Amino acid sequence: MLSAFLCTFATELIYFDMEELTGRYINPYTDYGFKYLFGTEPNKEFTLALINALLRGKEVIKSLTLLPTEQLGDTQEDRRAVFDVYCENEKGDKIIIEMQKADQQYFKDRSIYYSSFPIRQQGLKGSWRFGLKAVYTIGILDFVFDEDQDDEEYYHHVVKLMDVKKKEVFYDNLTYIYLEMPKFKKTEAELDSLFDKWLYALKNLPKLLERPAALQERIFKKFFDVAETANLSKEEFAKYFESEKVYYDMDGAFRTATAKGLAQGIAQGMAQGMAKGLAQGIEQGREESKRENASRMKALGLTPDVIAQVTGLSEEEIKQL
Image 1 (tube, helix red, strand yellow):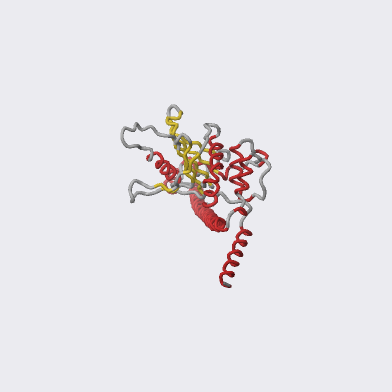
Image 2 (tube, one colour):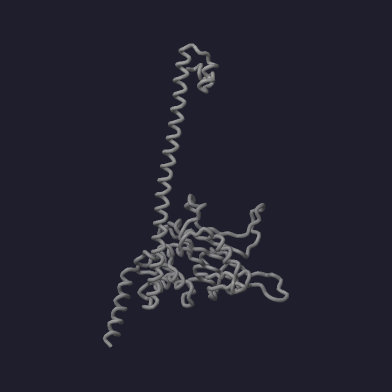
């Protein structure tokens, strides 16, 4: 009886310690946090609102059905795919949402590969005529594409199949939306659309102490209530805390690797610079020595053509000495 009491007491103590270590709101960049906020049945209205905001008026989705996130291949040997959030609208269009926490060498390839699952699964047996529903792949990225490092204003990418010559969309039922979140730097006072407000909420939620005054829409009031870590059950909080720990461990490892890479790059650059400077100095010394020798030969009365043969300088250079 006493041991059971002590075990319960210890569990309570650990739970309260974890509460002290985490913020007021759930970090959506964590695996558990994102899926809890946008991939669960009670919270799918947030998913609907987020998707409509990201589509920016292209169409209005009225309802969503959450689908299983694990997608299997045609055979047991085929590679599977596990989405963060996978859903379907009232028209049967499929929507994949991925929270990508760190850059990966083949991220774009994986994104395309993931989109092939809802495309392939639409194939029907019999006399199907290949009519496909739309597929949307949304990537919320906690990193910046290498090729866009210098463009701080371009963070919302909408990618479609395009006719290169016409510069027109060739096929409208396949869309990739990528959001480079580190580039989104609008302040609360600068938010002028639901698109801005959702990006602001996603990026700043982990460090907020209270709901921003600019986010007064009903959906945000409910979103911030649900996102409070204090409203999680003990079991939910334990899972979230572990996910948050993994996120910060990975973030720390990434920052360390980046810092080491930068230091190595600087050291390598300095070494290369010193070597290049040394080579240039040696070459300049050789040229100066040639000129000094050519001057002495000229003083001794040797002809420019002879001096040129000995020193390697041109006759024009020798005449100018």
